[in-house]
Image (cartoon, rainbow, N blue to C red; front, side):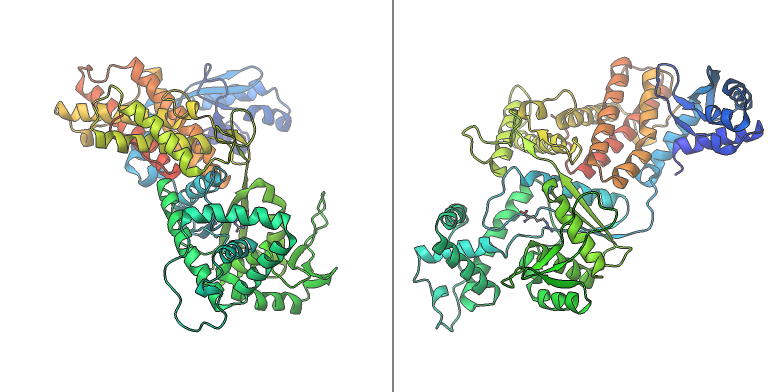
Length: 587
Ligand code: ARG
């Protein structure tokens, strides 16, 4: 559907033309003084320079041409030359009606693109902590957003499953259980299928090993050797690694499930190991990679750079591959198997420069062509109220599982307190609200900004929070249910022109959906969706408090309120669906 401001701009453009001025001057915007008018056009100001005429004269002439417009009313030229106007009530009602009959409220989706979203990025054998929240939550939302915009989106978790950390874990297991069959070089039979350690043990094994290797160079050498053996395919090491992977991935799945975050692909750094030698050879043959101080590098600096962009290191001087190498090989793999038009990465913003290097290197070495869009969303840190990285009360690293549990418990306490929910409903409802609290709390911030994870604020039913949005949806659902219980048929409700300011505000806000979604996608900015639904929820609540919906005696009027509630609820629900949470029926 045409965006509402575009329709109105067209009318104003025609009026400019009819008055003898350039049609391009007729661009409408939402008013920045809603107390004065709903829509404004500043074209007469620009026209003044072009036509050497006082802007107010131009504005007056254009206003006269708009006098019998069907889309706008109350057109006024005000000094020094603004055009202020309101939307016609009938036109607005027709537009909202059309939106409610259209797929996705009239949002038009362009060419279908294939998009890979690389998010999550956990490291195997380490539990998820609060720092993993953003990648998971923003990544899932970006994936949903791409799909809502009509694209094919494929999520890949890109596990950190191949580096020194795996060597460390294997080394520590070997220290503790040297007799395990995996470490017997002469063994040629079938290896066990059960992991010799549990996930809980792994969570202690990794930090212990990492601590030891920092203090003890000999231990570190052992870990590097174990990494080398694993990567070069020593059977026992591969077999043990596989078992560690199995239990670790099962545990990760459980954790991501709890957040309603899912991935189409569970690939990792290890998945592309075999592609590295060929890729490196091609980079050398193409004349891109050269040896610098023993290491193999590709220059990626460009003339326009204002800060230094160091070369992209492909192999260390000992021939070992790096984080870069696997990322580049992963691009190669994705181009071979998926052929995406775009890849979007989500990581901490401290990796901004890193991704700049990787992207330039991928383009320069022709792993991708010029048209492939490589984007990185670098996000800020989740902080505690003290402004430092979020910690447990005891000052330790906050595990994601614990954080979710804490918020679930808090919501459960609210839901089982004085409400008529069954135990089962209280549990499922509190989980839904907790999810909204966490995700909205994160997504309502610009991704690149740090934010304070304020549990009390996020779980509040009032203010700019997920629970407030859910509360609004639940309120609408309950009105609709009452209407039906009284014999009304929601599906038959027809929208009429607005009669009150609040009703009109709500309708106007609904019309902003299309352009909001487009810019959320354009800018990859979930926070746009959040601030939109917060405004929309406020508009609804403003309308609700001013209007007696159930007590309205004029049935046509009442039905029109109901029709408005339906579209408002549907828009809110589609938006939270993209954000990655859902509303309960009651709360
Ligand atoms: N495992 C990495 C880390 O912990 C994040 C991976 C992000 N994705 C990527 N393609 N590099 O920092």
